[in-house]
Length: 177
Length: 104
Image 1 (tube, rainbow over the protein chains, first blue to last red):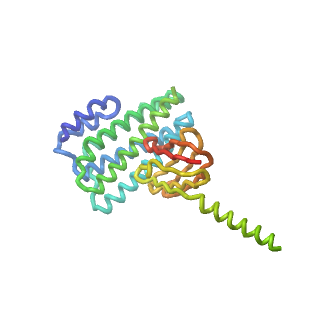
Image 2 (spheres, each protein chain N blue to C red):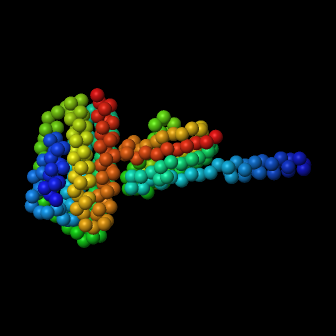
Image 3 (cartoon, helix red, strand yellow):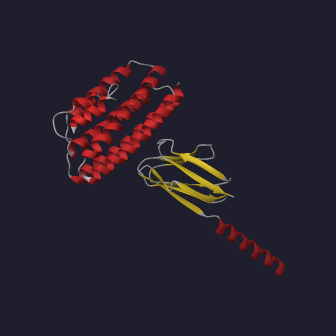
């Protein structure tokens, strides 16, 4: 399963997500505690990116978008924490989460060197690519691999949120041009 | 005097009639879905969007007729003033789309 996942992800991994590929190989498919950790990590990454944007972005639509990302992803992650508590599941760190985090930190460092309109464009372009990568991972691997019905349901809601953000980011990107 | 009484009764009846005709149409937003996705209403009706999600949404008309803000777990209303079919969406999650058909 992980092998198929990496194949699916590899095509869109050029921008952001070799993480999904490098995390592959260890097990057949991610377990629920691993899935919960990956999903939560994906949210934290986007919140951190948005917080950087709130400090650096110049364009008001970009700032508003970043604000939306913080609000939505904090809401999703709050639900995720409540669910793992209810299910008595301890999210389990894993290679995919670790690599995602490392890459996100590299991206933050890269974006920190940019200013003004250059930063705005780079941030929004990365948001489009990042959400695409996460959507694909959710759709093709995380959701099908989830055993618990409630976890699956939350991931499905998460997918719709992420797809919405992807379209929103595309609109903002189009406005910047 | 009876004339005044009659006039008052007429006013009361008329206002009751108006109230009876202006309906409230409820539309829910839950799990990033607008339901029903297509709804009919009449001019003067109140549209009430009920946001059951923990996420903020908006009901934003493509043609600019309305832009209703729906904080998490809140409702908001809009009274339709003109006929025609209006497509609307959520500005935060543009994959949420629906249509409001307003008849005269």
